[in-house]
Length: 370
Ligand code: GTP
Ligand code: MG
Image 1: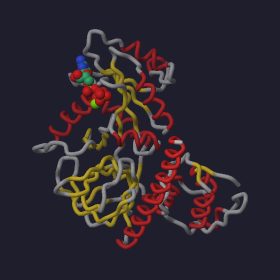
Image 2: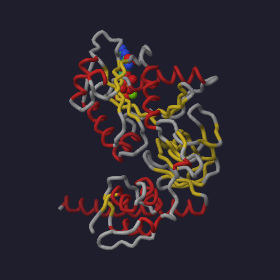
Image 3: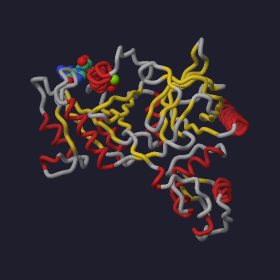
Image 4: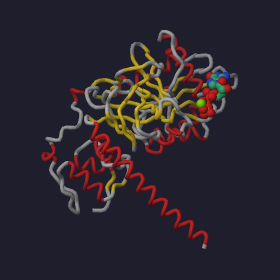
């Protein structure tokens, strides 16, 4: 009876929460794992799996074995980790990202072209790492608010001369809520006033105890400015990735999240997507948030045109009928008609909601005026 969260419903259906979220998405409902579902949504989803919802949801998992949309273990392949840089204002997040990009991207790629998108991949020891350059960005807020599972690792940048500050604490709580491992980058070590011990001390209060002090949090002292320590940080990222072994199935229709999107005078709607599962191809029919279209062209993080991209790859696409929002999820449909239907259904549902909100607002306004 009553409500269930997405996670609870997934548990009852013996399905992955991500699968339930995708189903909800197709039905026009944007949901996170901890979101309470209303009765209608629960019934709809359960119905998709042929389950009747009674007062108490009880059923037998053997009824659903035929429903094989989940990736099988043997279909999964190792994918690059998606790493997000977080931390307090001015602690050096952007400088760190630039520094990594300059040492890795421009050096490694012939005639490295200026970045087009705030997300990019570098190659370290023949292994790719995807970085999201989104601090302070609208996309980031949306992602944090939804606790989206885009990030595999959080790099918590703390300036050694400033220590733990409010946004440091905020970043920790977001990473913890999303159950994302944290690597602490103690930055600005080149400064005379740098005091890494103080950073370590302060972070113990938030449960981040360095390995040197008997804990299990990786701390990397570095200088984003001079580049000292950056190789170590990259190695640590690879180390964590080797342990975690993040996987995806490249042989399926792509799904993922919008990093940013805008209207371009010449190209129309331009969206930077992070492919999280599957392979995205030019020509794919796609639903992105409340909009849809066919992928007309794709440009990678080096500004080069590409025909297809696999899991953990950021890519800029054109061809959408409208501009989606940062944090929106996307899905590829095998059939263009279906994509259009789902896209239009979602758009009209959004319109309805806006109208309802509009109505509510004007009522409130009315009361205020009385
Ligand atoms: P927001 O995006 O505003 O939150 O800041 P940020 O964390 O991206 O900081 P940013 O990289 O813009 O750096 C802020 C200032 O710190 C700049 O003046 C940088 O040059 C300086 N800075 C960054 N890293 C280092 C470092 O390792 N050593 C020194 N000495 N200065 C640094
Ligand atoms: Mg910055």
